[in-house]
Image 1 (cartoon, rainbow, N blue to C red):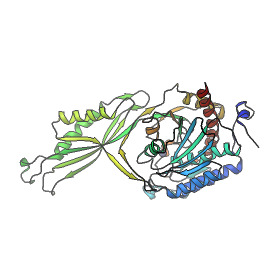
Image 2: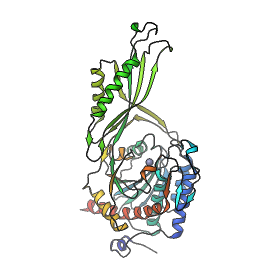
Image 3: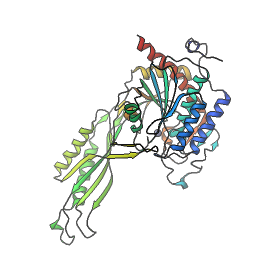
Length: 415
Ligand SMILES: [Zn+2]
């Protein structure tokens, strides 16, 4: 049965619904996704699975890009582009003893599917593919194109794979929906983060005559207290909350355990709230270093990374904060579309963690929201699980959002 955009807009059919057989296929896909371990940098097997399912579901132009993202699309090229983003990688299992269920078993108990990555975020990935499948199978004529991007290595370096997709592969989405878990509410931003390295210089000497040296560890201790005072006074945003600073690592360099440490390296996790820049955050720490009279330098950590396709990237561990304005059409149109779809208006939330939005909105200024199945609180925990009904609801809601948002973008473009 053809299911045209016109009939949808005229309200002849109020919403997209997965048939029972499609629900079962979506669940089966999610089970296979969870049963295929995909720690960051080792997404090859799961990427093959995603590409095959996209083809099976009627997505077009399915391919793997240079860094290993799997891309599928549907609709008419040359018009506006809506990007649906889901990452394929997951964090590790942690302590296996903490799990009641097999982390890669994808067991289903009373409507919940258990396993690593179920909520963060293979559930959304399955929902996005099956949401677009609904459009493809109903031959919906879109006034633009929806692109599903199943990306790599989000967990350690969020935004990196999206940067490759946009800056190197040349994809130019007008708007982005991230499928990170929101419990089917809408997220509009999160704090940013940066990883900093501080090198404290001392001077080595025999520990039997400490006065001849300069103890880098003692200087680092003074610095840590100074940083704690700084941390208490960091700025706060009314929506995203307070910035934070935490010293999370310390190593010393000394010629032996009876020598005065000549160097000390600190790692700092710094969460940036809205309005804070990296330059400002670095300057605040440099001011503490000067005040304490310590010989030290601070800088943003550089990562180097190799994807499963062998593609190498490097960059700074700097992930900006972002917040989509409350009155932005992407947010308002999504709220009203989902209100009609679900019969209730979703809440607008912010995420406690960082996502690929650090690049799409934080760096590239592409309007971005989050909408996904699953509870954000179970991400990275033992017995991570997702309610299958929410995955199916998300698939149907993605189909609705694609139609409504592309229609609005096309109208704006022709206005
Ligand atoms: Zn995630």
